[in-house]
Amino acid sequence: MAEPTRSAGGAEIERAARLTLEAKYPIALTGAGLSVESGIPPFRGPGGLWTKYGEPPMNGFQLFLADPKKGWEERLRRRDDELFAPLMRARPNAGHLALAELEAIGVLRFVITQNIDDLHRQAGQQALAEIHGNFKLVRCLECVSRFPFEELALEVLPPRCPRCEGLLKSDTVAFGEPIPADVLAQCAEQAAHADLVLLAGTSATVYPAAGFALEVKERGGKLIEANLYESELTALCDVSLRGGAADVLPRLKDAVSRQRRAALS
Ligand code: APR
Image (cartoon, rainbow, N blue to C red; front, side, top):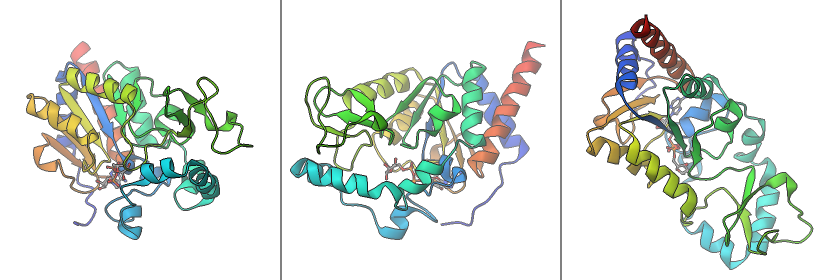
């Protein structure tokens, strides 16, 4: 793994801004790297949780189904471990705010995030799909209704859906768990419309998320990457902005605004 290079120069930023403005339907696909500057460790690469502890078992969902009560007891115990404590403390960083601003000025059409940290919502992103769920929500495995974790009665475990009595589980998609059909359909529809994907802070190693970017590229669309290191899709990117998301994305947003004003004047 190369040393972090903060080499996103002015010319690359300007080119990425131009491609973004030329696109009819630019979307973003974000990953854990976007939240590193909010204090949440990534999974892979330097400082990654899986780098440190190894990838978790791929059958987490099956283990939960085998004993949901035990699964809930473990979930409630984990509220202050190395993954959850930073989630509870984290706040959106300048990278999240830049993406929300790109949406507010009518440039960025949609964000597909792999992050469960709720930070895009807190940053004000409206057109958003959390493909791996949101740690602040629980989801019914029968009717797919979602409820805030705080509103849950936890006297009896596992908790049951107030709508259909189905089994409730954290909305965070476990390894081995299918992506919920509603959010998967939403992501597929957005990818079908997209002609540019801004990859921000993702290793692009997990599917179906990474597949949406590949699909756009294969259809002749553009890929822009904002990443501290190389990713699985760097070779396919039209522009690779090497640097921290909290530095690179605000610079990209400023260049888009500047070029847009110049075009309108
Ligand atoms: N700014 C931008 N990118 C960064 C930064 C930063 N400050 N720090 C790290 N990165 C990059 C890394 O180079 C890496 O490419 O962010 C990426 C993080 O990759 P992963 O940890 O694999 O995160 P992600 O791509 O979101 O993983 C996808 O895997 O384990 C599952 O469900 C989990 O949603 C996650 C999915």
